[in-house]
Image (cartoon, rainbow, N blue to C red):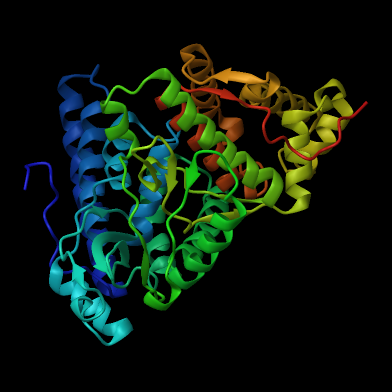
Length: 441
């Protein structure tokens, strides 16, 4: 085992009391970090918060990685939005996308006995008790049955039962890290809780995985594993093993521009087909959920998080990104009101301010859709996009909750997609699957 391989956990806190105690202990550590920071600042007034952020990020990540579950999932989600957190948090929390500490063998056997009444060796011909990948909700093991190589996803004990209590416990940390208003944070947490309750229901995930992989079967260069409902349960999923490399490993092989474009196009088509043809989308676009296969295809290995887009969100949102709606200020403001980006009690001055800022923001976001092809390796676009995000994150006007709850996962999905395409430096044809909204004349 290399020094970078996380050590196995022999136990995981599952009761509310145990998990609450862990959060309290972490809170004391963070309090100590602040005392240390301000003590040093007395002697060095010019000192910034880099060391404080590094210490806090390390302590919070260590605690969340031991607790696993929804708290670690929130950290993973936040790490994908580079405008929400200081870099130290992004760097540390990104580890949960690939490399969280796995659970030990005895805990895995215990989970199988609970749901199947058998040990894994009694179900599969071969079962590797050491996990190949561990993330926030569960970990993956390799197995064989009747000559078929399988991937077995096993959920951590207690994760599905502790979502509500964990999110209440993480709120104080989120307040401090995000600086959101209480109303905005409550909307955020409610939507996250709804998705996480679905994501921890592995029977639902198997049904959705089969449904979505069949619906997306005709997409070029996109492949899916086969799922086995009879060998799956509420906390265990059995599916085919997909050979391939995660994005980071793939990029380390220095792939050609042609191959990066091919993977990028597959990713773009996969997401936009779902958004515009299915009106429901794989809403967890972190790199750990994808494999690049040896023959240069995009393997999709996780359908746990699906966001359904209702019509009263889909039409006004995509009308803003793909029609000439912006040519009419009145119609634009009407769409902003439908999406609760402009609120009923806003003053004329506030309406003008939010109209200007949101129009600029969406105009930036929609740039890839304006032309038929877009180069996601273009640094200037991302500097402008993230720079604008950083600018508004510091504005007091944006501390108040703005936008319907559907933005949380739809924005996360699309910005996550943009980030992966940027890492790939892919050139993509962006007119393959267009929004179904009428062009206004």
